[in-house]
Structures are given as structure tokens and as C-alpha cells.
Length: 357
Image 1 (tube, helix red, strand yellow):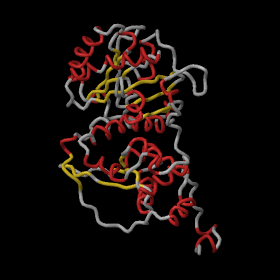
Image 2: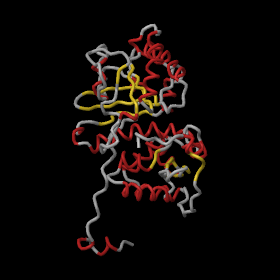
Image 3: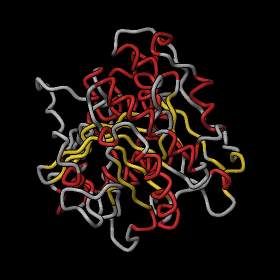
Image 4: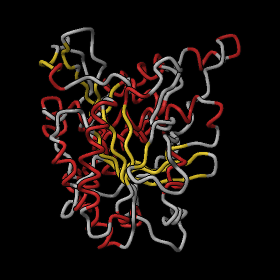
């Protein structure tokens, strides 16, 4: 849950899994995968390569109508060697299954892009290494943040026109902006004909706030170098920490040569209402650091641009304007392909369909 993320200190190892027979990643098996994998499967493969690890609940929110259907399909992908999985051990309860890209899935992705697996930058031991990373909880937390946005767009009738347009991982951000700054993610959210793009700093309450404030100079340098001013969103675990962080951030923000290059807003996870069906960062929890444009209280995510009237709206895909994501063909968060149609009841099937040979 985005309102109660699992802390890194709660992960104390990994539960041993019972051995399960799996398909070997051979040329013949790759040929079989050509007709087994649906467009949604291929979409999940690409998402795992981009974001390194996603939990079963996150994949369900992104691509499946129910947890049961997602669990069944992900188990099939695991048995086919398309994805790998692990389950961290937690001191209370049971952690969800965590999925990473397996060699079979990497081969499919590389073939689609006309590359060798090495050119794709995939290594199996590195992919599975995230299971032991000290940043696992942080990586999963960022993914949960975006999954909550997607879940809101999928299930909230009032958000019928809402969606996550783009979601870059911290690895892609580091590739393009790492010499100046390293955001945890880049995203783009649209709702009610309002669209906002942003960098995300996801704070777990463990980072020194002075270090967080020190990143503002890098964001200002990036805006000056590219000529693109992109809002920065800082997500904190509690309102108490947010209050302290805002004092530190405001001090550093005022010391910038041009503070207008870094529009900044903060929010806290405990401000979300846990009693609603789908709490998400799209809710009315954001407070701009510098109150302008008539925004003097917390607002919804898509209303943040009202606080920064000097910012132009993000450009449309394929438009003549520029945007951060024009640096490369981005991973757009287009909706996952729809699920396959249900199988007709046996009474309407032919004998060959019921007993395929």
C-alpha cells in the first residue's frame, strides 16, 4: 500500500522457494514463445526491463483486471522462463512476490528491438541482484507510487480522463541527467484536460534532509542547460517530516541563482485517506513550496501548474515544442493491451477446441 510502504529494515532475507520445473531458454523454446506471448505479456516484459523489479500487486494494478488473473498469468510466464521471481522475508506477514526479467524475456525483448541480449544491457545475475540490494525497498516504493496513480486512473469513475502518460525509471533518468542530477523518476500525469510533467524525489525518512536540499542546485543546473523548467515533487512519509523538510528545502531554494527554475511541491503519505478505495498521489495532498497563482492550500496533482503560472504546459507528443522526454523515444505509459477474450463455455466449442492435439 502506498500509505504504508515496507521499510528496508523489515526485509531480513529471502524465503526459500520450492523447486518448480521450468522451460529451458533454447532456440526451440523461443519459437514456442512466439505464439504463446500476448501483447500484454510483451508490455510487462518491457516494463520489467525498464524498472528492474515490480511486485505482483503492482503488475496487477498496471495490467490485469484482478489479482487472481494476474497471479495465474505471471506464474505461466515464470514457468516459461520469461520472468523470474523472489519473495523477500518480512518479520510480520508475507511479502508479495517480486518479479524481475528472466533470460527468456530478455531474449524476446532484444529480438523485438533488433539487438543482441548483451547490447540490451541485460545480465541475469544483475537482474536478480536487486533481490539483495539495500535499495530494494526504495525501488519498490517508487514503483508503488506510480502504480497507485495508474490504479486510480483505472478504477475511479471521476478520473475517466486521467492517465499516466510517461514513467521513466531512475536508471533511464541517470542515463540522461546523471551528470547534473539523479531523480528517482520522471513522470507525466494528465487529468481533466490538465497535464503536468515532473521529476520525483521519493523520501523514505532515512535520507539526511540537507542532502535532499542539496539536490536543488543540480535541478537548477539541468533546467538552465536544457532550457526546460520541470517541476520537482518531493514525496515524504509523514506530515511531520514534511514540515521539517519544507524549512530545509525553502532555505536552499531561496539561495539558488534563479529559484524559478525549480518549481517545487511536497506531499506526505500519511495525508492520504486510507479509507477510500484507491488512495493515490493524485489526491489533494500537494503543497507548493512557493505559494503563487492563487494556490495557498493543498491541491490535486493535476492542479499544480496553477501555482506556477510562468510555466508553459507540457508539449503534446509529436508536437514542435520540446520537453524533457524529447531527449529519446520515451517509455510511454500507454495502457496495457486488453486481456484476451474469455474462453467460450464447453457447450459452444467444437470437439477439436475442447481436446486440442
